[in-house]
Image 1 (cartoon, each protein chain N blue to C red):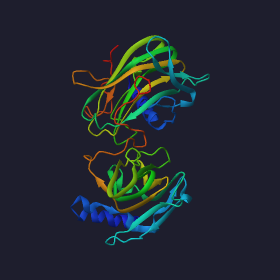
Image 2 (cartoon, rainbow over the protein chains, first blue to last red):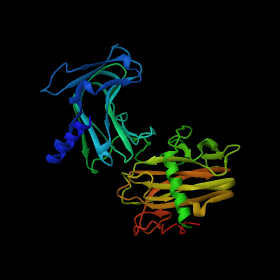
Image 3 (cartoon, each protein chain N blue to C red):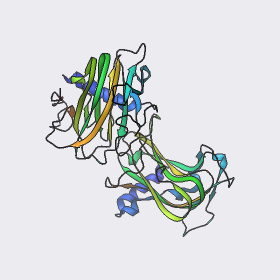
Image 4 (cartoon, one colour):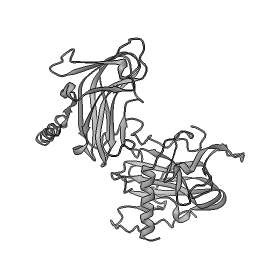
Length: 199
Length: 196
């Protein structure tokens, strides 16, 4: 893992364009990705059913096409070592089929002692729903100085099928705004309910 | 106000950052502090025509050295490079320690806020009627988070209402501690220019 990441950093120094800095995080395939979630037994994961120009693709499907309580996710972890203090983006192409409830890419920054994460977005405020063609999605979070690791993936909550390809993780500049309503510390854009009348 | 007091301020600021506990009894706000278990929060109508107000009360046997706070975090995105003012009404009953609003601007290092004021130099003590207080801080470009709320140190009862969080111009004087002015580790501006 560290060796792999070292190689990535070398690449980052050698290549100039921002796009070249991106790590194709799906390319590690089943070696580092695993199924998780609140109800992983309700979901199945299929790798590489269709090859797309050599890019790995992964499918996450509810086993019962009519109902799936809880959510399933395909995820991986990554040491935060060289990303501390950086703003990172997880992006990818997602195709949804009959997603009943919601689905999304997610990225979470975990701290050393397991306290509340510093950065988190799971697209809950802009969910993927229904049936869509291949579409680009992204989540952007800050990696705090005391971050230990990153966890990332895509989740499906409820019945449906999700296909994901070209997942990339890259460092972006501060000019890219962080996404999501919260960053794990519950960070809305504006103060709320300042008169305690619930608005 | 000496270095040790300033040190304590930073410790409190840090504790507020890490001591957060989730609670959902006031929409958008949560209970935190060094001893959140010693305090309870909620919303009540005091029947004084102000509608609902938030309360923060110490529980029986609250330790005198701890504090509780009702707080929220906000993204600095819309406020970077601006001066912001947190103001609102506070009312107190038999506050044995002190109480106040607080506002903290966090940078990269969570243990070292970019700016902070918790009204410790002009805290609310004893029993007081509704009165407006304010805190004014600059939100630096490198800000990562804005945290604010009201706190009660020691025992007592505190109510808060009609908060405002707004951008103000440079003519409004700062309160509290700001980093970076002269890069001194001695806080030079401990905010005796508050509105009281």
